Length: 464
Ligand SMILES: Nc1ncnc2c1ncn2[C@@H]1O[C@H](COP(=O)(O)OP(=O)(O)OP(=O)(O)O)[C@@H](O)[C@H]1O
Ligand SMILES: [Mg+2]
Image (cartoon, rainbow, N blue to C red; front, side, top):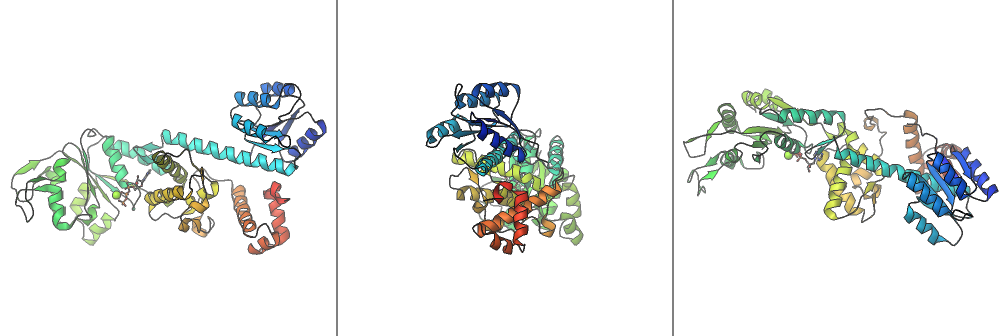
């Protein structure tokens, strides 16, 4: 993505100063037009949609405030920088309340103006990116709480919808935290059974001896402690959906009984000979490889085929890193509304670290990291690297062999590499308090090489 040239209008009645600034801005790649008065500025704003407005507040005739007003009214996205006189901070504050992005006080160095322009542009980009992500969350990149915009996730949403329109048994597989339960709920909520109940039973969370009674219910006195008659989860899910989580941990005896339910749609409570007919859809989930367990003889082959009528696979998060910004936004939005905080953004650098991580705990782990980061950000409106959990902060970057990641629609290779160069140079300068010799040593570069690179990659920072 090459930066397109920014169109900038500079408004100042001091001719020589204005012309000098305009020329230097042009040197830095801006396409610049000049206006010598408020009237002139209004005329130009009416004719052309500038990206950036730089205006002196003090102008003869129509004031800078009025120019600012007209510009923002016409182009709400314009980046407006106001120039104020020395000792008129209040004017600057008013202008910012009015919608200006930033201000600069006369007299100023050209580099200071350039810096203000760059950071305003960056701020604007972040803001619109976040707004864009938010709008995506509202649209097609979700189904019942599952969000994702990667190709695999969009395909998955379609599959879930298709699956929901049938009444077949479903087997959901995926690593821990990939959203298996959310997917099961999405199927239920989009199916004809949505009026019925969604009943979940985690087979690995209940001792083997109790699992059977939990699933099928029991008659009074069926075993020690069975004081009354009790409905099992199967019956509770009648006309609805039964979600059997970690189905791979079921004992062989219970596997046989479950197979019968799936084949005959009937069962008996424990300690009772009365047969109960049931209308239930079963969705099973597992993080283990059932096919392999079948091969090893620890899972019944016939049950596997009964369960695996419609297989749904949830990909690990590291295989769809392009979903991370959207997921982060999703969790922030939810957490912010829970805690009553306003809109919160994430710095690009923090996002890069998040996207470079391997996420063994998948989306659940990401959710926890975001929650922690929000707590550490202590009311700031942007989450930054230092708010992230140490294991994510300390990641040594994206460039470590297999950790590079290529987005679906590709990247601009040169800019990507330059971004990495610049980020390393900035980090070493931070660490050495701006000492270029020491910074160069940290990077194993010649000092002159570092300075050259800095000039090329961040011209406005090279000189200070
Ligand atoms: N695509 C997603 N979009 C939004 N949230 C998600 C997504 N996937 C998972 N989550 C969230 O991550 C957490 C874990 O999801 P879920 O419980 O469905 O995973 P699981 O695969 O069942 O994990 P486990 O195998 O550990 O039981 C939940 O808080 C869920 O809301
Ligand atoms: Mg689960």
